[in-house]
Length: 127
Image (tube, rainbow, N blue to C red):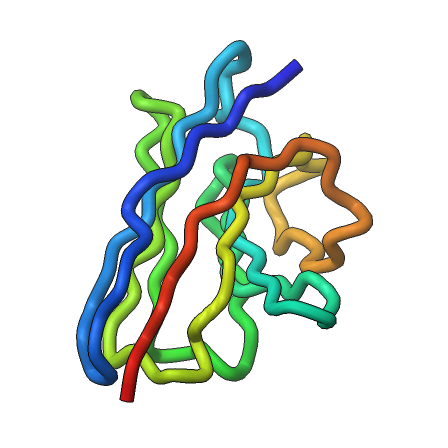
């Protein structure tokens, strides 16, 4: 079973930047949908940015398009989320997620379709 280890969360002022990392172990993640979901208390987990490691196709939530960038390093089985121009509404617990991809197209952003999850890392953006 895949193990996902996240790092890089923290606190930052609005307009600042953070970089999250998610390292997958126990599998070779070269044919996977890996990415980031976020959740705030009382709300459903929301897909933020997901990459298909087979080909690099990406999908982003509308609210983060142009500010957050997901990338991959297949040699390290790791995906990164570069978060720029952060806003207070980006404050949430961020979870790395994994599922095997079915091809090289865009991955689904429905959390119910993902079976592998990291422990989460908190991102707090103050105004």
